[in-house]
Image (tube, rainbow, N blue to C red; front, side, top):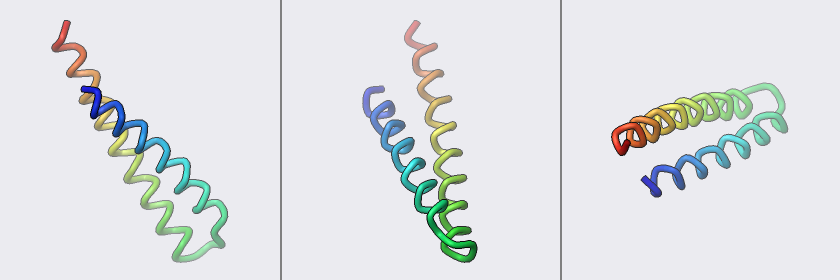
Length: 60
């Protein structure tokens, strides 16, 4: 489970970095690309959070 928690932290850091890059970019291809990456990373983070919660529930 420790590896999942560490990866979740990494994903959250990447979300912040991509949001910063998106916000700094002018409207266009680059901004849209980072917006898609942010959305994808958020989806992955949500799925990982759910997996962590399920693993914790199974441990009880």
